[in-house]
Image (cartoon, rainbow, N blue to C red; front, side, top):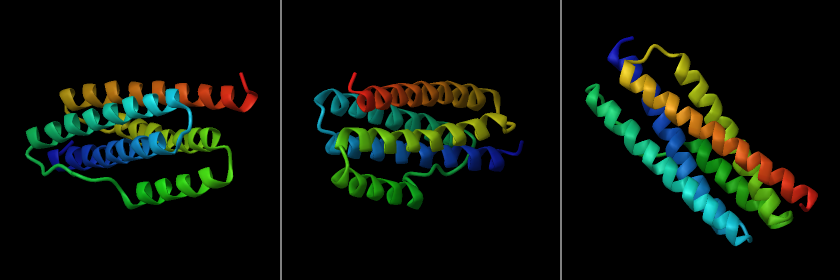
Length: 149
């Protein structure tokens, strides 16, 4: 894979990570449960770290790293706010965060299939595993809140 192709793949993941960072921080503001607020802030930090790691990889490949999220991510965060005002905010936020994590999982799954340099591939795999772990945890929490467990 040409470095330009690898840079594009990694820059797409930077946007995904930035969207996650902003989305989790916003979810922490909307959620009513202090445990969820804490969890979302922790996940926001993980996303921020992921973006910084990806930016370093892009720089090492001679590319210019992305520094922000996507328009779609901003629109999703706006929808989360609206939805949380008309539904149980904890469940609504969990549902929307899970949708955001679905997007992250898909982006990372696509990136894993790309022909990336060895170090970049290892980083993407590690971050993919984290995105899947976070998604599954959020899904399980959503199910718990829906059943009142």
